[in-house]
Amino acid sequence: MRQALRGLTTRGRAFVAAGGTASLCALLLGQKDLLRVGILLIALPIVAALVIGRTRLRLQVRRSLAPDQVPVGTPATVELALSNEGRMPAGLLLLEDRIPYVLGHRPRFVVDRVSPNWKRKVTYTVKSDVRGLYQVGPLMLTVADPFGLVETSRTFARSQHLLVTPRVHKLPAVRLGTDRAGSGENRPRAIAAAGEEDATVREYRDGDDLRRVHWRSTARRGSLMVRREEQPWQSRCSIFLDARTTSHHGHGPSSSLEWAVTAAASIGQDVIHRGYVTTLLGGPTTIAAITRRSSTAVHQPLTPQALLTECATVDEHRYAELAPLLTVDRQAQDPSLVVAILGICSSEDITSLNRWRTGQATGIALLIDAASWTGELDGTEKAARLRTRTDATEQELRRSGWRVARIQRGDHLPTVWSALGLRSGRIA
Image (tube, rainbow, N blue to C red; front, side, top):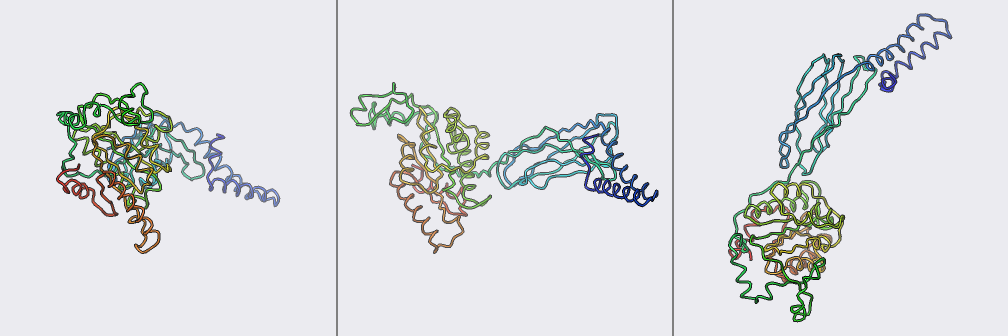
């Protein structure tokens, strides 16, 4: 009863105020008829509160989401199965399912009367043009009296999640030039070209076990060298997604970050289907690994589903340098292919990239031309400054042996990927 009285609506409070005023005036003026009106106005909300307070509605809700994973711009259907398992009827019900605003307006339903053993199904659709992991629910139930004087609310705890993944482009079947899955042919050639000792050691990286230091090679080269683990039989690919706030411009689905995320998802799916053991750096797993000081999750090979989940939940972050994002990947086995999707980089960033790309790995860089996403005219000082810095990044990457594609707003990823492969017949 007390909870029901706290649920008085604006109309109910107005009735009580009007009734109290009328009753006070009736006592002062000696008007019995006006007193009856005042008592009636006060009694109506109280009676409504009693009825609502005694209502024992046992409403059960079952929610189904089909499908629970969709690409951006694709609708999904939510079905709510409602049933009253109690024996008491109820009056007006207001149902509202809580969803994020990016999925659309919150769906609201009105049920006139709920009888014992009542059942009903309601459906609505949700759609998002922005990738992410969204919570659908919980459902909020509001019970109101027919006059709208009192209402009480109840929230159901259960909810579901909808994963909105970035759009994945089908890429042309260009030859990457690093395929050795199932063949092992590149291993003997590497030994023959560099010598057995050179092929079995590499430069020391932060976090390497000091017991793996190869002192003979260290003395000969003048830098700390460690022994490689047994070479992988299957090709490995490592993808880096630069999601720093300073690297991207634009907002929403048309931002440069969304282009980069789509590229990472598409390239990742392509190389996984080719048989590469694939990892992704720069996403939420990498950020969590840096925070927790544990890189175990970063080294886990990605499945197509895990890759889509990782890309769907990428957010911009405020790391200023690439070094922390790249050194968290301390793999014992070096990748044969590295793909970096980058914004403007400093000399220190490119040094970190070159350390990450070790050995005989093929390096591919997709460089975001930030000036084309700013909306600034080419003649403005800001656009000129951005283009100058992008030019410097591109030149330094090319000098370091990276195959670079410069990305401008509106570029189609399959066309860019095809051009990378057709320049020399292969990416190498």
